[in-house]
Length: 159
Image 1 (cartoon, rainbow, N blue to C red):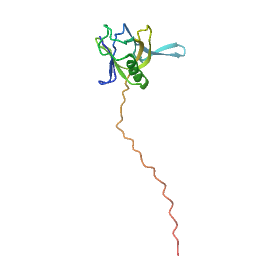
Image 2: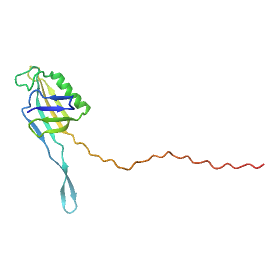
Image 3: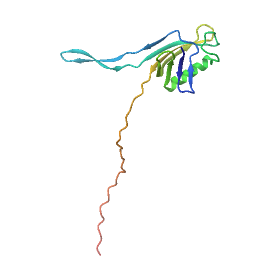
Image 4: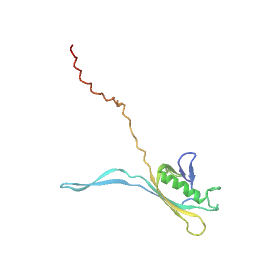
């Protein structure tokens, strides 16, 4: 199993230490409405966006349990995630060996040191990003140049 955050093929980040667990939340949007002489009714409005929580740490050194070698520093890891968060970049979360491969935004990112090892522990909450499907009408709006009123005709002079 691998955990990837990918902006594109050239800008991706594989988590160096597998999270011990991940949590994926989903649900429905349900609105309520009061109807005279019936009372409250529930209306289904569609799916809520998935929310995924990951927590682990960015190691200061290459431990035996790291997923790969040549890991970047914890500071560089934090910087990469903060850049995506601050810019509102849509990234893709891919967890190999599962069906999880979805576009997400970084909703929350918390990090800090704990135990004197200089490893940086983090929690990241990702929110599914849903692309809007738009249609373009075949009608073309034409913009006409405004016309000026024509001046009234000038009276002709008689000699």
